Amino acid sequence: MSDAFDAIVVGAGQAGPALAGRLTDAGQRVALIERDKVGGTCVNTGCTPTKAMVASAYAAHMARRAGDYGIAAGPVSVDFPAVVRRAQSIAGQARENNEKWLGSMEGLSLIRGHARFLESHAIAVGDRALTAPWIFLNVGGRPVRPPMPGMDAVRTLDNSELLTLPVLPEHLVVIGGSYIGLEFAQMFRRFGSQVTVVEMAPRLIAREDPEISDAVRDVLEGEGIEIHTGACCIGFTPAGERIAVQVDCAEDEPKVEGSHVLLAVGRRPNTDDLGLERAGVETDERGYIKVDEKLATNVEGIWAMGDCNGRGAFTHTAWNDFEIVAANLLDGEDRSLAQRVPGYALYVDPPLGRVGMSEQQARDAGHDLLVATRPMARVARAKEKGETNGLMKIIADAKTRAILGAAIFGTGGDEAVHGIIDMMSSGRTVEDLRWAVPIHPTVSELIPTVLLDLKPA
Image (cartoon, rainbow, N blue to C red):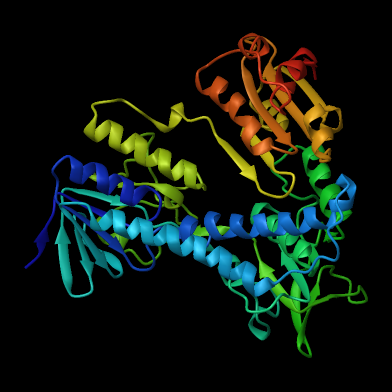
């Protein structure tokens, strides 16, 4: 005997609850299945607690710089357990608000447990069987643990474990020089840890253009973070109560010894234990669920949203997945992933706001390019705030004058980039953005000026 629903949503992360709300508002009977905490990665182990701790790290950093602004603050100390409690409190409140919201949905059954397909439109949760003509997968992802020599002999941490440490690491070694790793590296350095970053690629955040990578590295090294790129033989050995990390193949090369090791080398989708093969749902070689431009899988009546579909790795892209699915199924619209302009941010300080293509990606796509850059040291707002690290970069198509992408690495860069996101999303050209009249004094006001410097590259 099975329970019949109009729709089943697997996963209470960013997209799942919102879609459940739209479906129940439309009068449907919906089952929302969650095996862990409501809110998913973002609320529990990602954006919410991490950015709360980034804010604490920024406060400590600015307190130490108080003298630069004519303020006498005295010695600065960090109460690390209090930092953790603050972040966990904010995350817990967000989770509680989500649970209250779900509890208010008429027609929703929140079912706790692990979901596994029995067949294409039947799912088991423990001893309970559920069926529905519409099934939506929002199962998220988890940190990757690639095989490295010596991993079984030492303790390594992932980002969620690092968020709840009872004591501040004396020396944190971060394996991975990309977005998650760099945010934690700077955060813990500002809390007072010695920090070393070990990256296999020849430069940090390798998907970015070289001048952006170099600028980020300059900032981090300027704060005392040791960085090893081109680490070709990463391995681990116990060193008493510490962990020795090998970064080079040569036996006589010195090892980095740390008290704690963070593995930040990517994420994988939570699709390996869903029984997708019994449903006939196809995945790619990395385990991501294959979807079309409208988030539909190869099986009629099954969709995949968020991190598990490989079409975006951010909270905002998961939310947009929900918007696309809901608009098409409930509002009679024709929305697709092709209409989405990709944007994201790296939350080191200063933050990096990114949209569209990098210069290298645009070249690979065959565009004739116009490129302009400007150091943040020439931005009045940055100088007034005493935060002049970074640069702005915009690229455009020389023939169509379409804006192809931008990077704003500097104070307020994660907010200022939205003006460019909006223009790209509406299909506007360089000239349209050139004649905008932004507010002074802001970081955004320099965007039209930067566009005046566009030159063939």
